[in-house]
View 1 (cartoon, rainbow, N blue to C red):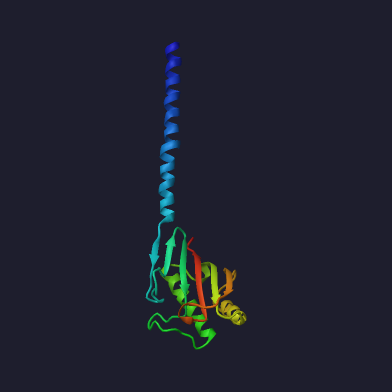
View 2: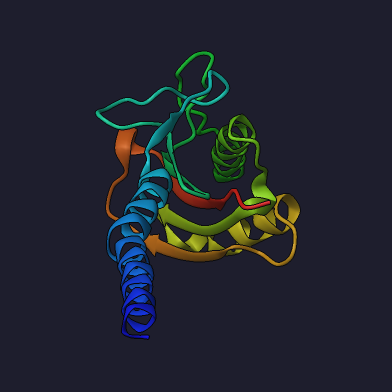
Length: 166
């Protein structure tokens, strides 16, 4: 009888040790591998949007999100500024964003957050009209900020966060 009880206790200890081994060693390692996959940074680059004019990427894919760097109204073919009007500039910026989204397998409708920088908030109403034309409801969350100056002295710049979740 003592031997039977002793064997059962030993088996229980072995099972507990296996469970502890899994909980404290294997499970955290599996979680770390999952976190590493989520935190990878993959650059996204397209010739249909202006190449970076500094030490940054057009966009970075990380996990299920795409982070698009600030886009100004540069024509990607000529690298010239499109600034004949505020409307033309805003349309060019949105087209650049759209082309980067497409390169990552997304669209403007997948944008969840926009930051918009304007030289003149007098263009706010015009911007809203353009956004209603180019974006679908629900519109992305956004911040619109008037600034003193933008790169290359343009009138508008936008950056975006895009959801890549399907």
